[in-house]
Image (cartoon, rainbow, N blue to C red; front, top):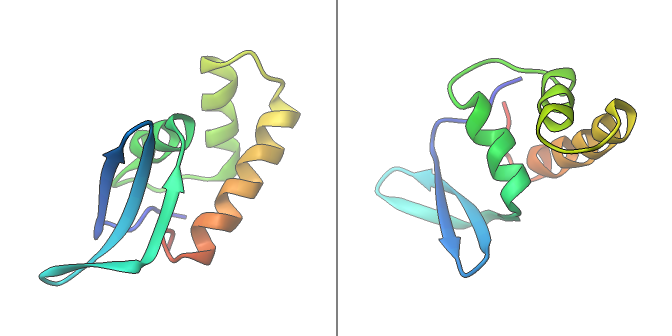
Length: 88
């Protein structure tokens, strides 16, 4: 899978918002709030193909979490990102 290229990432206070860029404007109906960890994962694969296993590996390298727990968390994140059309 791949993160779409037409996205804008904004930081508001302590939260990040990812919004679809549609031509000359942002489509706020296609927005999702992200925490710092999700932003780290998305930025680590921007412009590249990736899979859930890669994201889980990145989480285990950066945080003290088991691979199984990381994979379960990544699956939830992927579902949410697909829901709002951030992944292709």
